[in-house]
Length: 297
Image 1 (cartoon, rainbow, N blue to C red):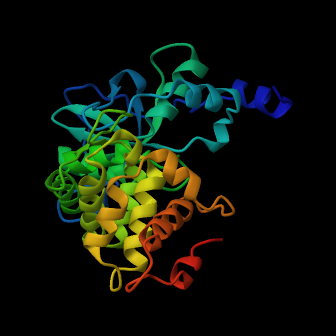
Image 2: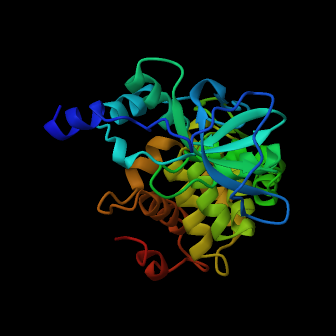
């Protein structure tokens, strides 16, 4: 450990002074400096006892022990951000900063200490889940599977629409890895396609199901991305029946043999394989590669 980190670990995490208030689980002192977020909620900067802080695991991802270990090893008290805490139903739920709190507990080596917080009043359960899902800034962006889970808990319209379109195509969303037939766990790729165009998302999943019936090998991020890229580039030119006919008898080994490995864009490599399959029979309706080449680099 560097001298800087050794010194930082000996610094007081937060001096216990008159501005720090230790709140019980039953009552909160009246707010004196409330910053309004909207007409229903507001927050103030204050201190809370670590023993009063908890997480709502119904929308939060599990604590990553490796991430906590890294925070502890590089700990510098001057860089600790306030936790974001919601006072809901007499509980103090940490919806941004759970890993920081876990690290602080290891640094302190005792349970009861004071923690800098942004204490929110008036947030609902759905508000907390939504804010957790949209974490940005200095903290690690929430992993996409955890983000989807939280957005669904918050009744987010886009997340609900993504799930609806996925299920209508015959697939099931998974927030943990799965190799079962018809189950998709590459949530980040799905979000990317959906945010490009919900209609493109539905078309992509429909083609995947009709061509390969949900076989696990066809539901990896790059193959899904390759199908989406092909559909996006050739939406106004391709013949859907021809595409499905050319894909239906194809397996992963064939796609891997045809894909272009001279590109860092892995979606493109599979889109190129699909392009070659589509044009294999030649004749009228064959596609030109130029639009697809734009994605090669």
